[in-house]
Image (tube, rainbow, N blue to C red; front, side, top):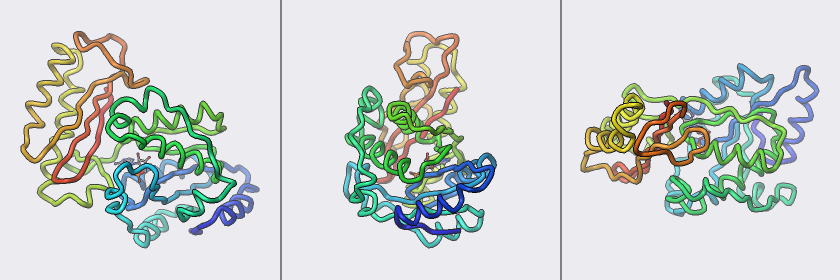
Length: 284
Ligand code: AMP
């Protein structure tokens, strides 16, 4: 696997490989500390595209809390070994200077609109602006045909889809299912900071989301959400930020008084467990 650290190296790699016939480039952007969830995106890309490139870049502008940026796990050596073990074709591993000072990658601010005012947008001011900025820079640099993103970050997928439409990028976003631990905890780089006992407790998030989605159509959405909270989220160690049910199409609000007939719902959770912020969601 080639490790490309600059835009020039990346351009050179693409020029050498784009003469292949057929040629389709699948791209998996990550912040590293890779786990099976990340690797599943790469395997999906490999099944669909002729070439697969992953990137690792811990993007400073999407961390609204500088301490969170500093504490973010960085495990580049083992990440490279993991990517090599599944025969990923290339890794783009740029520096902050390369992404933010190279004039070829300059971008204009993006109007995220409604999606920036709800859920993660509301809880993490500036986060999606940072995500949109780095994603646009990466798309300009990599020029992929398909981009594989985890539905674990459901709202992020919606933001990036909007960016792709607005900027008319000729590429397809493919949302991929969330990989989970045996107890239902969604895999996440942040789980590395959770003690084992907390990982066990965190399975309540999966149970809460499952309860909500399995009871779609029962009582009212409001009653089911309240019951899900009291049944599954009543742990002293857990601080809930939100548990919401929304329309899975566009994350718009739904009626809390009655279930709709043809609506695909998404239940979304964010909260803190023993100092670690966790998010998860389930569609149904
Ligand atoms: P991150 O490194 O956290 O920015 O994640 C990089 C990509 O991996 C994003 O598209 C995430 O949604 C995706 N991802 C993270 N966790 C999982 C998971 N448990 N299952 C599938 N995809 C995931």
